[in-house]
Structure formats: C-alpha cells, structure tokens
Length: 267
Image (cartoon, rainbow, N blue to C red; front, side, top):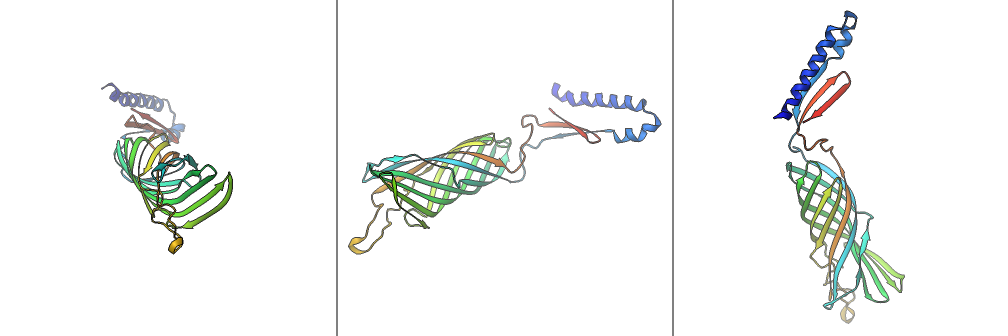
C-alpha cells in the first residue's frame, strides 16, 4: 500500500542528505558531525492500555423527583447541586473499543417538595458510592458511551423547612433512619473530549417509610404514605490521570532524532 512507502522514502531522503553532508565536512568539523548524526526508529502504538489508570472529575447535578403522597402526585421543584460532587475512577481497557471502570463517588443528592402552598421542604443526603460501569467506543481516545450500576452509602441527612419563603427550621443527622442506608441506582451517559453527561435513576424510595419518632399514641410515621424516586442529569468534566494518544487514528510512527531535535511522523 502507498502509505507504507512513506517511511522508506523519508529514510532514503535523510540518508542522502546525511551522506552529502559528510562528504562536505572537513576534519575540523568531524566531532560536530558525529554529534549531529540522525537516529531513526520505527514503531507501532499499542491498541490499548495494558495497565489500569485513574481519572477524576467534578460535576453538577440537576435532579427531578416523582413524588406521591397517599397515591396523589406531590408538587416538587427541580434541584441543582454543584458543591461536593466529586469522583475518582479506576479504569481498565480490555480492547481499544471496550473497557470497564469502578471507583468512589462523593455526591450531594436530594429533592425540593411543596406539600402545601405555604410550605417548602429541602431534603438531601451526602452519599459515598461505588459504581461498576462499562465503556464502549473510542475508550483509548477518551470518547465513549458508558453504562452501569452504583451503590450509594447515605451518611448525612439534612432538612430545611420554609414557611411562606422564610426558613423556620433546619437540622442534619449522621446515618439517619429517615432514608435507606444503601441506595442502588442505574446510570448511562456519554463522554466527549473530557466533557460528559450522565442520567442516573434511583428505583428505591428516597424515604424510609418505617421511620418514626415519638412513643405510644404520639408515635408518628412522617413518610409512611410518601413515595419519591429520584432521577439525575449530571454534567461534568473528567481530568485524565494519563496522557491520551496524540494520534489515535494513525497507528504507526517513525521517529528521527538529531542531537536534541526530534521529529515524529505518524502514518
């Protein structure tokens, strides 16, 4: 094929130039010429990374909730969170076009609801999650579709109550019984040039229906008749822990080095 002739032609050209230069060099320049000799090497880029590597990133989350109270839809407001949404992923590429990842994700997830016209509630949890996902596409170049599942550990619950727009009460609890301790979810998304979008769905009720406070006749189950399923749309950027290939489409290279100067030709 024609492209396979390019390295041979370049090699012939450099050999000719080198030979011509040596014939016209006097004895006083012999040492300088020796230091300026051209070293040529050929190679092929690997089809995939053989070792695992680390990536990390920040993201903002736009959350929606399908909420019901006693079987009737409850009004809620989309919630955006950017603070404390960070992930570190451990990646393994099995081929150039298929890979897998896991890692740790620190997230701020929750919802905003309006049980009544004058009452608004903001309820959120901080979670630490472990995803297991798969990548399909140009995983070596960094552009791919991904999907998988995740388990989140909810370790801090916070609630704010507003009446007629004024905050009247707030509190937070560590490892609260108001929500499930473990929150499973499914996700899918797309990443292009470091920027990514992900949709994540939590099929489990955000609230623990069995949670109660008080005793005897005063015992209250605040979430007994409440259902809330969360959906997130996440926008983020991933920082690469390794350098991606410069020319992912061209798999061969020829390097020419003379002294400190170096030229690389891809084909």
